[in-house]
Amino acid sequence: MIKFGKSIGAVLLAGSLIIGGMGLSGVLKGPEKAYAADEVQKNIVNVVGKGELAIKPDIVYLSIGVTTTADTAQEAQKGTAAKIAKLTALFKTTWGIADKDIQSTQFYVQPNYVYNEKEGQQVKGYNAQHTLKISYRDLTKVGQLLDAASTAGANNIGNASFAIEDPSAFEAQVIEKAMLNADVKAAAIAKAAKRGLGQVVTVIQSDDGNNPVIYMESAKMANTSADSAAGSSVEPGEVKVTTQLSVTYELK
Image (cartoon, rainbow, N blue to C red; front, side, top):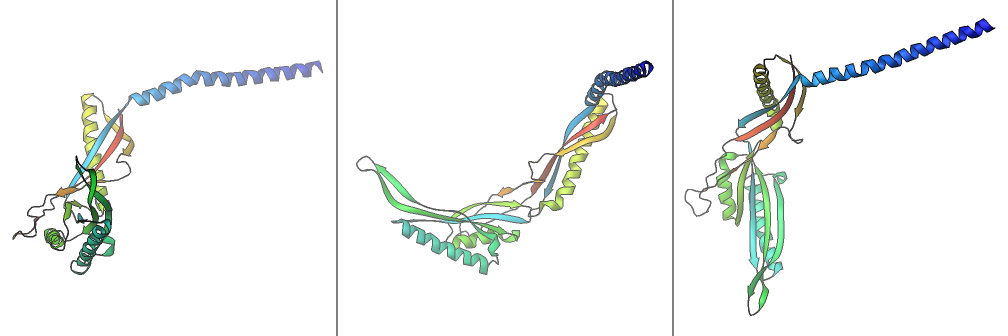
């Protein structure tokens, strides 16, 4: 019985040594792993690659509205409503613009205040404004459309903003350009540091959830008066599709 008890003690002692050894091994290897992680962090380079495409737009967004002044709010609102109804009918029937491409973006009726020292501030009439956003795809006739709108009663015409209706068709191209730009930058940095460029570690596209980004150009309109013999002239030019990549590479 005594010998058996000693055997148990020996086993327990051996188990303690094994467990202790494992714990000690973990302690010894801890700093080594941390050191390896630090080395990985030291041997990387991070660059930002930018891609850009200049493309002819395929859609224009027009801001066309009516502002009416009258003695009462009701009269001002009715006057504006009648002109907007006329414009909407014109866009649909003559210009073939669909319902989905005509959207009201602003509407208000407000008093027009005047001030003099004798009577102070008083209301002198009311202004009613109604603005439509028109999406139009025949870019060769934008000037003619604006002239027609002006003739029909539109007296509040904003800038024409040109864009790409479906930017996803160009996303792959602009990403490739951004990645190529990142490769060139990273290679130059590695060469300057007398190092070799390794594989890509991470790639992050940073466009705030809108990839790729479209920069819409606002066209300048000349001869916007309907009385001009030449009519309005609107040139669409080009729009830019861009994206940005944050790329991390290994350094050899």
